Image (cartoon, rainbow, N blue to C red; front, side, top):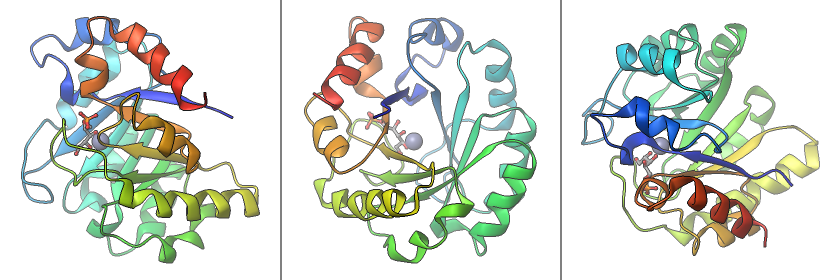
Length: 217
Ligand code: DX5
Ligand code: ZN
């Protein structure tokens, strides 16, 4: 089973992104949290930053849009060359239309669900997406505790993926550590976003290897 580790640069040194990217070369993708202080009560960075990261990052970018009105912004991130663009289900009227738009631009399309958002309405839409992001904390901040209560959603998703044979990645984001990654993997996650546990480690590359080894141990 695939195990992708996507470090979140929300936990990196904001004054040294290029150097920080060099410390996580052994990861799979770089997770980039875009927050607008409306959809979530926190503000990070936007399109101009991503355009520049795209130029210097050795790894593809996995964009997580925690913003209102992703219809307005998501295509610009695809245009910038992002490998995947994930928007929140709670923020769009027509998720399928936006996913189709992103795919037509060559990006992988992802849909994210806050901990309180039910997964059932999205199961039949799985063919429209390349990844589903199950938030394992309330979006907005790094360093929060993993919510095991979200695992049944992953189990439903992974059963649906197996049933349909679709190649949809199942991503978890929030509170992923060597302790919590096992439960997420057992519930069916294959793509793990980790901020503090990677960038808080003395050697992020070693921590990436540890997380990868632990996930399916
Ligand atoms: C939270 C972000 C996460 C965050 C995870 O809203 O979407 O990507 O960086 O950070 P940790 O791994 O510290 O929980
Ligand atoms: Zn994120």
